[in-house]
Structures are given as C-alpha cells and as structure tokens.
Image (cartoon, rainbow, N blue to C red; front, top):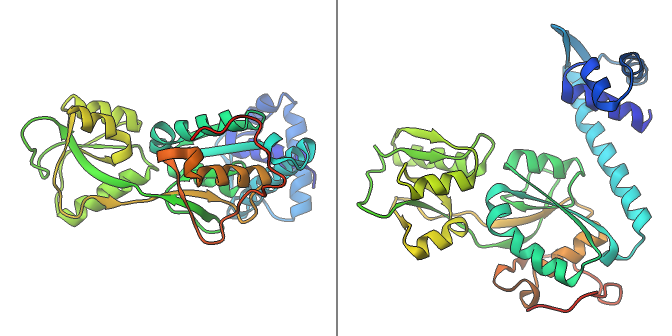
Length: 308
C-alpha cells in the first residue's frame, strides 16, 4: 500500500469520480482506475460504489478514508521534520483557527511569534470549527485555536472568551421578534446561538451570513442582533457602533483553546511556549494547562529580539 495509492484514493473521494481525480492529479483515468483496483485488492473490501456517473464511498470506504488522511498527514509531518532537522526555531508550524479567532486573535499572536522566530515556516488555515478540527485530527495541522477539542486531541492552553448578544446602537431590540444574524453551518457560534434560542424559548427570524466579519458588519448596519465573541466586537463596542443587549444566560463563557494532537512537534511546543508567555504575547497570552509542553531553553534560541 503506497502513499500514491492513498493519494489517488482520496482524490477520488474529494472529487467524486475517477475522471475528475485524474484531472486533479494530472494522470490518465486508466491510471486512477488501476490504482483503485490495486488498493481494493490490498484492503480486501469494496471502497466505492457507483453513483450515477460518479463514485461514492461505501461504509467501509468511509472508515478507510479517515485512516488514509491521517496516514498521509503523518508522512508529511515526518518528512518535514526530518528535512528541517531537530531545531525547533527552523521548523514548520501549520496553524489553524476557527474564523472568529483567526480574524480577531491569531494575527496579533503570529506577529509577535514571527518577530521572535523569523525562520519558522508558518501557514495559517482559517475556517469553521468542523473543518479545522478535522484537519488537525488528520495531522494536516499542528495546532488549532478554537473551541473545545474533539476525541484524540488535547488542550494545551486556554484563554478567556465570552459570547455576548449585540445590536446596533439605538433602542433595545425585542429578542423574540428581532432578526438574528447567524454564522454559516459548521460554526460553533451558530450552534451556541440556536441553543440560546431554545433556552430563551423563542423562534425569531433568522438570517445566515458567511463569516463573522459579515455578521458584525450587518449588525452595525442594523440588520439584526447576533451572538458573537466579545473579542470580535471589542472595537465596535468601544466606539459605540454596537451595544450589548441583555439576554438571560449570557454572556456565555466559551474559552479559547490551543489544541494539538497527543504528540506535538518541537516547533509546535515552541509556539505554545510563546503563546503562554505574557512577556511575549502580551494581552493575547493564553494560560497553559497542566502538563502542557514547553520549549527546552537549552535547545530553543530566539533569532530575533523579544517584544513584550
């Protein structure tokens, strides 16, 4: 069972057909079919079934796809670590964040980290909780800033965060009849909002928008009320463009979590050490959890000046 066969298998999973996978991989359709046939012989079960002109996973295929993603993620992680050597400050950091944290919290943390460790190769992937959590579980990210971790993932540090109800400046809205602005499907804030509606026993009009930025801008323009992280609307609240609206059960305490797999890389540990150091991260600093990893001082040498 080779990495190429696993990559071909996942290309078919993601694209829905052998033809589309062949185009994505720049190979012939017959090569894709041959790779799938060989993989089926090795696994010993049917992984795909016909779905019109395309292919869809069987139940066994669904199970195997999860393992295939994790296997390829670990191979990529291992190759990157080997090529860059053991020095954490010259490694790779694949950072993920849920949308709210990615827009309001992570940029400041990255700025201070990059100033101190400019040789670390950093990438940032921002998206809804479900997608970002899946990437971390598949070893395609090293650390995620978001809500509570799922199975097999570990919280390494936390930072206080509260969800509050806000609306444009003006008369206080009736929460039962006002339009509520919702995040996209897969967002943890969306789920928290719908749960709040149940707790308040209300069924208000809903308007779904595509991102936290769109939700906040729409709230400022008076299109409705919304439940949002206080971090995301700090400036609007301070400037008076938005006001907090009292709602039973709010604010909702939803701490930010810095989440990794059970075996973080040396560079991930370096980032976590930075993240939990108030002298470096300032007001954005997290609090480390019991047993959270720390960089080894003898091995980690900053290549840039410290910025308190």
